[in-house]
Length: 286
Image (cartoon, rainbow, N blue to C red; front, side, top):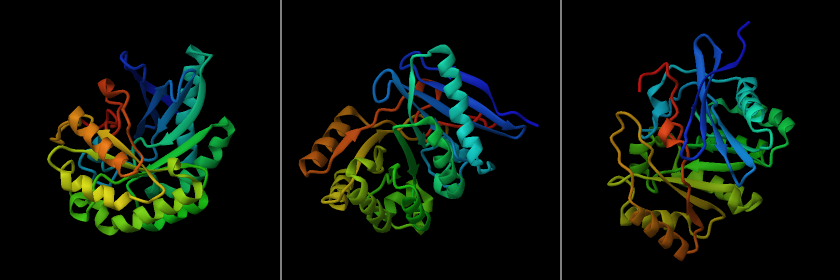
């Protein structure tokens, strides 16, 4: 029987984050990430994967380069948490695991039943928060909302109109922005805007223009949601660039002026390819 185990680990000396490659069987490995000091020391979080590849086709994401992965079992998701938790506890016994986020490799809604079971199994860790990040599959998003009400939900939008979003996330052609945002707003009205979050990755020349900002503002005004702005982390062959500080500041000022709560989410682990959108096991060439 193949034992789940950590086969590689990499540490970012700049922010203290760590990336772990966890092997489940001879053909299946995923990456997960240790996130220190969140929300503040001595607490930390772990970002876990739900699939060993992804078929959503997001143009900015490294995991999209690996199409031949499989769905993980709930026990394999929990194993990532247990293995990293044990590693951290052995070296830094004073630290406390505070949250787990399902935002590593894979699309959680494409493996929904196992993700829901994993949420249940994670109760043993007595976490303060569990979050799930999704590009949005309308039929399954409703199921998630109905069956996991205590999570924090992140919708990866990245475009405020269908044409722009389709260029970035091909799966959007089957899942309209209006339907996805309506479901997120419904969740926010029940569980608070701080738990219903739109993720918007600014990509220069693609979705960061004045028209894009006006469309996002109009789309989200008067809704029970929060917006987190992200910057692109380098991914081979993607061909994007990072947005400037000036543009990020302008977007945040504009959104907050129109009473849309917004903030910048600063990614950790960029130097070790552990940042948002950078996870990809060594089995696939970078």
